Length: 414
Image 1 (cartoon, rainbow, N blue to C red):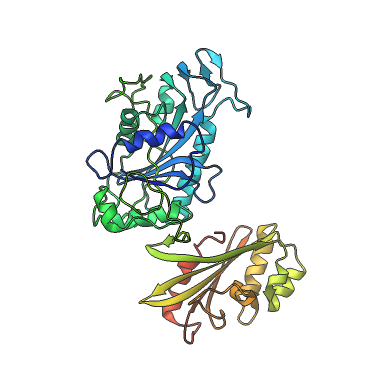
Image 2: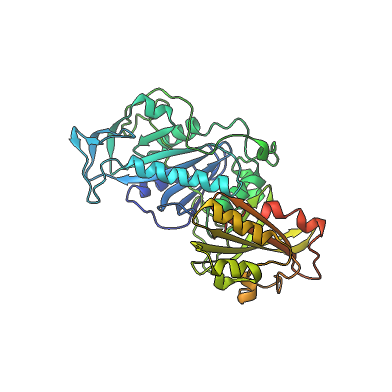
């Protein structure tokens, strides 16, 4: 298990999570994988104590600090938690912390799916502390793939082995892309380091797999608790709270990002192609950032929000600039009307960020004569533009046109 520490532990029990993971040591002799600690994936509602990427699954570890140590914790996914028979009360008013954990895990799964990451099962571990001797979960909750546990090396290990159950392993190359999707800054470990953590050099192409990226896990018999030394094989109440990977360098079991290297933007992966973010913007004044007939239409109609983002990729070693615009309209009818206007030849469009001075080294000076495609989904209109970063571009260039469908699936936020 390779540990990468991206930030401080968001909970006190996170220290126990990190300590448990560090006892496994680097390499794949115990389990393998990469654990990012103190990471906040994009669009996730909270910082996570750990996200563990394993060759056969992704574990989201969410820490929950209890008011006091407990001998017995009743922790249903719905309903009031009880500590030694007393209802749980916390300063924030929460009576069931599992809801927060499930929300975070769902956000991670959605992020992987939206970024076209590897379709590995995403499961949830709720790590509770400062100490709990026995955790009781309903059988139905266990079958949903959620484990509540006090983090010990054995309980986390058992949870990881039980929850990471993909029938096909994730390759080292795919693992690097998945880590880039989940961590907002940093550089993923290289293939050599990932192979040392149990990711195969080559694996079946998982892009065609149909696994749903929602929290799930195979059925498990309910396991009630785990005392400090009694959580070996029978510790099934595990919700692997320990595997957290962060993008950093170094071969030690825990590493912090190098202060001498500026954080690198997350790589977005669509159909196996890397797109490097190069800036984003959002505004409610849609017309101000458009031109031609599109600007005239927006000036006379309500537009709720305009989001713009730009990316860089390459085709056969030649750099390509990508601009994505997302306009949110009040209803489907107006979105359909704007789609008709924006799709007409010479009708104008949305101004690319580079034209407003948001250029980047090696990027295109403009998106003039770019290949363009416009699509509509319910009340949303998306416009994609692709252009060669250097040299002349032709809107009919097959190499550019082939990128448009991928560009339309890029997020308009970064």
